[in-house]
Length: 198
Ligand code: ATP
Image (cartoon, rainbow, N blue to C red; front, side, top):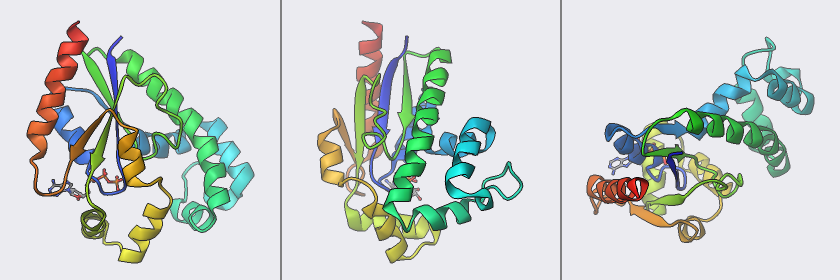
């Protein structure tokens, strides 16, 4: 079985950017957030559970998720967001597990914003935290998504504190516009390859 590496970090920290470097190095990457969005449409059991909790309006045609409608419910109510996460996370974790079993590489990477929060560190050999200072994360996400500062801050408030998250990780990649990303990723890549060989 391949060694399993997790990548996490706050919104806009650079998880996808770091995962992209691993991908260029030939390492399979599972984007948990993107996959969760997919299974919310393709898994009928999950879809029905979401309809039961949040109403038919979130799947107007019974298949396609109206993300705006669901966001309007869960992003203004922390309880509803917990309900949604408790429905989606077990399916997303199972999907990642199936995916990882099918890979044939020395190690595989799973990227997720909510790793510790979702309890998905089980089965992961090493966790990498991607760290960027808050002001830089806000700036990057505003630029990337065309969001307002308030919108980005509201999304950040729903995640556990960056500093705590980094302390839970085995390795931290600093993505602060000062230190280069590629050498930091290469160092870990070599380390993981060596460990996988052993
Ligand atoms: P989210 O949690 O919102 O999915 P993320 O942690 O995956 O975000 P990215 O999408 O990788 O973060 O990065 C956020 C934005 O910042 C992107 O537009 C990305 O291109 C940019 N960015 C990330 N790292 C750097 C960097 N080192 N230099 C310049 N731009 C960067």
